[in-house]
Image (cartoon, rainbow, N blue to C red; front, side, top):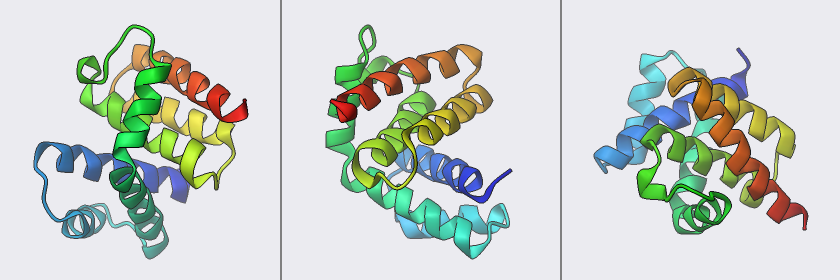
Length: 135
């Protein structure tokens, strides 16, 4: 597993925890990183994702809601919603990874943490998010 994949997985876990119990993101990340024996590079990349998603959550939620035809944000599984936020942040705001890589990573996370159907759902929503960036 690559370092960036590990970092996305770590960010997913931290953001999932913070959504249920808002507390200090840095302390939550430090705890999770130590628990998973993440190296400094993985922790730094995860920290950037966590900060980016947290600081841009309203804009990301608007993008996701606009790209999702039949599901409101509050109807989505929490894990799917967080995976979509991370990928939308990487695609629209950070723009430091290729769009295809961000989408593929998100599909893999969705399959792992939410199931095969979630992978298709995430792919469909992120495809629409990416189209909005390209146009």
